[in-house]
Image (tube, rainbow, N blue to C red):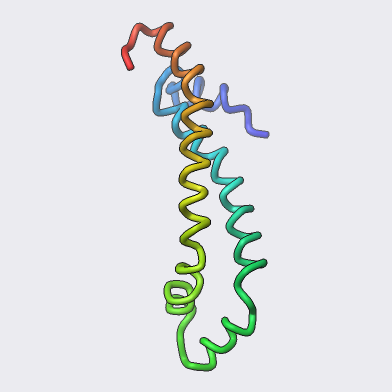
Length: 106
């Protein structure tokens, strides 16, 4: 595990800032999103559908935008809701502590 305090505090000197908290929470929520998208794609999109669209002459990009992305719309909306509520809940306490120590307003 990367020691985030030494990186943010020593090298970058952005330890007591709001943007640091936002970037940290965005990075941590990305792992959950990747696992959820991977599981949804492997479980709900049949291989035969992808093979049929390749036989019809579509490229990889066309396959993604025409077949996979419409299937992912419910998962995308779920991840937006979960990530935003989790980030808001997890960021409010540290943000309150940081802003209290450096006298900033919300």
